[in-house]
Length: 295
Image (cartoon, rainbow, N blue to C red; front, side, top):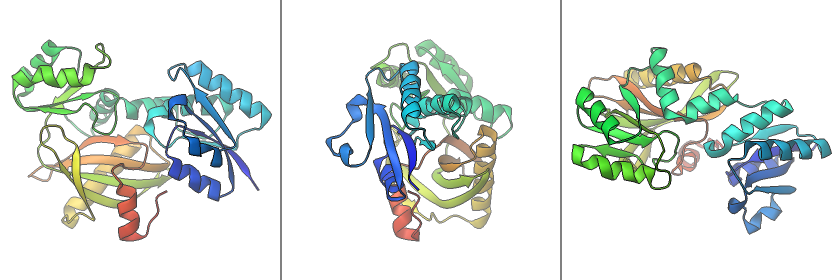
């Protein structure tokens, strides 16, 4: 039987998989993201002009639901998952709550929740200007990491090693929005890994732990090794840390992508986590090396 599914935003490879499984798809997305080829995937395409107008998203979804009720809702990229959460609540569909999505998306809220529940103890602060950052550095020392509170894919992230680098790092974040808040946190020294998890009803399975190689000034990935060579004792500690993180944040279903740092003493800290598949073709690497198709 054909099921009518509302999909929010991008990740067309997943949408195509839904279509193969006999789903009838309605797409709602930023109108600037619509492609000519989309006509072959979706029954309806709704382009939103003002992406920040939450009411427009909800009212349009309600209108379509009256014409042809939705069986389910999916949003596979964090950029618009807040809209999906609000629509799901309005229509009684199964999805993460708005609170969960906001806590995962906002890096300050994530740090606060992880630290307050004893999952991590990373030093951090929310900053507006240079003075806030200097005050944090005076208390913690250099280097520190500066990042936007709500971006993705390492956008705007810098490692500050000297105070004279603050202005350049701030400008990178505030180019589009001068009032944007930033997160400044202690630099976590060690090896970085990403942990790809798939969850169902709060039960988590690690599919792969990936070693990451990054630029040392702007921490963008340069390469990955799937099936990172890690001692079994460290692997177990990583898995437990990630499971505790997911439980703390309320991540119970679907894919998640969590980055961790393992310091030279074997201590593990969460960098951040996401309610989506990993980027940089990690799902493709996993499929080629294991046969597991996360899509």
